[in-house]
Length: 168
Image (cartoon, rainbow, N blue to C red; front, side, top):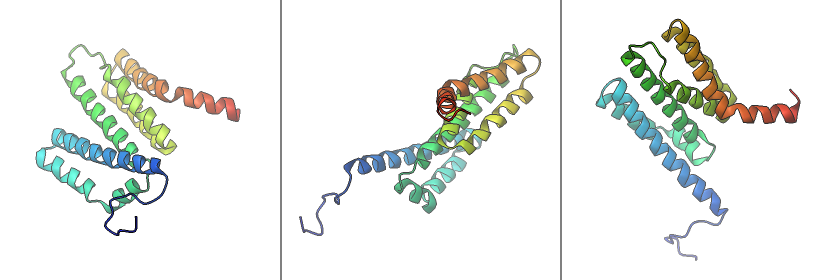
């Protein structure tokens, strides 16, 4: 239609519009996770300020509209830090000295971040160091193993595939 006010989408690959809608939804999910994490770590005002800062950030909207995966990486990173916070709370509550099973989730989040961008995998090293610092005795080794196993479950098959194809 030649009507300037037409609500028809411009011609193009229709799947791009689905991916754009998914990216916008992921950005809003990232804002909600940012608010929740900020509220838990500080207070509701800090969470709201952080979420609003995320939503008005022009570079983040540019990345969202470019449909390059940045909102997905943000959601994975925020979910990983959310899990990390839960690990810390559980470790404080735990009187038996056993590491919480949520360390598997922390490792899985690190593994997913590694799959989004190999450089983001450095968070796995930080999580392993955290587990070594936070727990003592036999629990230290169990905690470190839980983080590593969580990461390997998520990213191990991808790494094995790459080694099989590339030969190293």
